[in-house]
Image: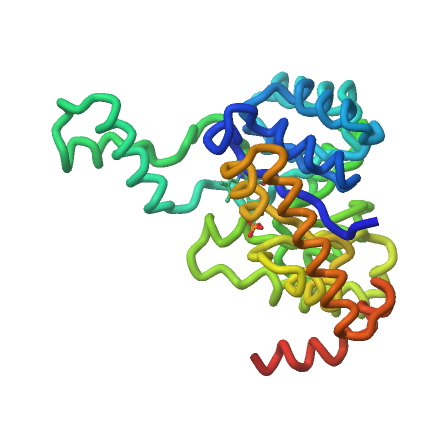
Length: 299
Ligand SMILES: Cc1cc2nc3c(=O)[nH]c(=O)nc-3n(C[C@H](O)[C@H](O)[C@H](O)COP(=O)(O)O)c2cc1C
């Protein structure tokens, strides 16, 4: 079993006309979970059908969720998560509000100019740029108390994506959260955010110190571009390592085949890295953690 998953990247049709179906097919072919983005380009049912059509067992994928402020809408999302047999919802908690994304603003201006060439360049475009994608729609006040309510209401396990501190990870474990994703949204939401690999080191030791490491699955993403990066994250405490942009680039280049090729390359590189480290299995790789942590601390 590959210790990999594919992270959600919204609006997949910007990369390929078949959108998230590409990632779903590639993940199914490699039997790894896909965390389907809430803000996708394709209906979730289509994405799940593509995965199952490629032989992925039902209940293997997760649905990434942003919490809508509107409670009926939230119930609709939860109902779909259950009906489409996602194994869990992964609530993104590192994007309570939209960060200042200069490139997105620039791209929006460029798109607007391209679609209406006569539009004046400069301040008019700037002043009309929305401050966030849809400021009123999402609930930015999600708290631990809300988590308990959501767990009761969801009817599927609730995973937290974007955990960055040891104390939060311990609290999640104690709250019965089955898995966390250590992530900082790929550094896209807060400039100067800590690297998620640094967060992983803190989280791993906090979970161990609290005696709850075995009660929670630790997923990790952020900046993985080589198999050796996967080995490093596994050794530093991850159970599963996510690929976001890397697979998205594969989709942009060659659709589902491109995504599949990327996963294959990373799996091959991971196998080679493990051979070179003298690790026969992932458990042995985990045991290299202490040495790597010391080395990572010096870097
Ligand atoms: C284009 C793009 C769109 C993303 N959209 C989402 C999203 O909708 N929801 C979410 O939780 N994370 C989103 N992310 C963050 C990724 O899931 C992931 O955490 C991050 O990119 C780090 O992984 P990577 O370095 O392998 O890309 C997005 C990232 C990118 C690059």
